[in-house]
Amino acid sequence: MPDPARHCGLDFGTSNSTLAVAGGNAAPRLLPLEAGRPTIPSVIFFDFDSDRTLYGRAAIAEYVSGTDGRMMRSLKTILGSSLAEEKLRIKKRILSYLQIIGGFVGEVKSRAEIQIGETLDSVVVGRPVHYVDDDPIADRHAQQQMETTVRSKGFRHIAFQYEPIAAALDYEQQVTREEIGLVVDLGGGTSDFSIVRVSPQRAGAPDRQSDILSTAGVHVGGTDFDRLLSLKSVMRSLGYQTPTADGKRPLPSGPYVDLATWHRINQLYDPAVLRELRQTEREARDPERVADMISIIAHREGHRLAGDVEDAKIALTHEDNVRLAFAGEEVELTPAISRADLDAAIAGSVDKIEDTLRLVVATAGLTADSIDTLILTGGSTQIPAILTRLHANFPNARFVETDAFGSVGLGLALDAVRKFG
Image (cartoon, rainbow, N blue to C red):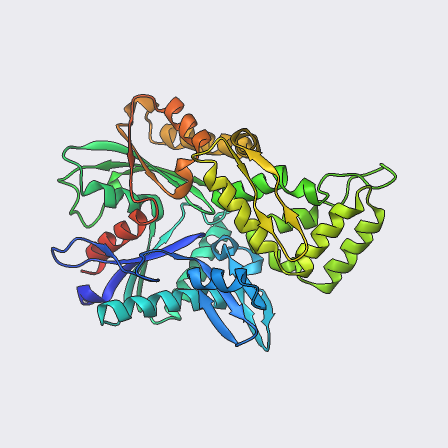
């Protein structure tokens, strides 16, 4: 049986990742992975100038500084797709997306091992309820891809746990009586929900399967909200949904969708794409807008623009109105964006979340009034439109905010104690 000091919980997230350890009677703890912080953005930057690979905040800072290279983010969203095993050239190297994910996992593992002075060999990996919606074969393949990737970095014993279940395990440490909890885990790439029976008496049980009353998930998350907000409030400044000069058709939407989607931005940095966009510029009613888009792509500023849109979305959690602050090499974009714009942009996605919530309650054979507690985790649970919908659907439930970015990792470490301790 592995030594308790050598097993852990790994939350590889679409936006941020954590790694936690727990053992014996000690409470689980998140390890500092970057600059003393327990979270590390799930970002990789390949620095072409010095041939270095950077991770997390350091990767973002190097990219924003204008260093020539390639930034990768939201890689979790490609698991289960054909893109995962697709090869791409990083200077002289040919790497698959899975190898790039493996590089990030290996870096997190190495940093954690330095912190504890031990080699980690056993891990419970968090996974969404559905890596891939409505495709169980692709979903199983996604987990297999992740398992193979994690094993390649030196973990010998690997188990998986649903991320919302992990959040419930973390919350359960503070309960004083039995409760029916609904875990609402709104991550960067997926929204997952689980109805779980929690209690002090059940907390130490090694097998909690009978306490999981139902689970459901939908492939909607924070990066989708970023994309939808960008298309609604920013991309029109670059020509999105504007017509050709003859007024017969709108401009092709594909490049705009790619520019608004984190993991697709790199595909625009291709000479063939720029040639197509220059043809679009010649045909456009508003060629100056397309010229601005060409400039952003030519200067590889797509991720910087996407980051500014994300910042605007986060600011709208607390403000009614914000102004985008994008300053590129040649282009500045400063459209005003309101909370109403965000609400309208994500309304369809919020409907999907609401439908999935109702499904998970019905699958458990319960009604909304049966839910004692809503356990909120993930940064998107703070979006006002989502909170409003949650309160409307569960007016009698107590709302509990967990560590938005750490509760899943902590719960995974607790699960590792049960599985490997």
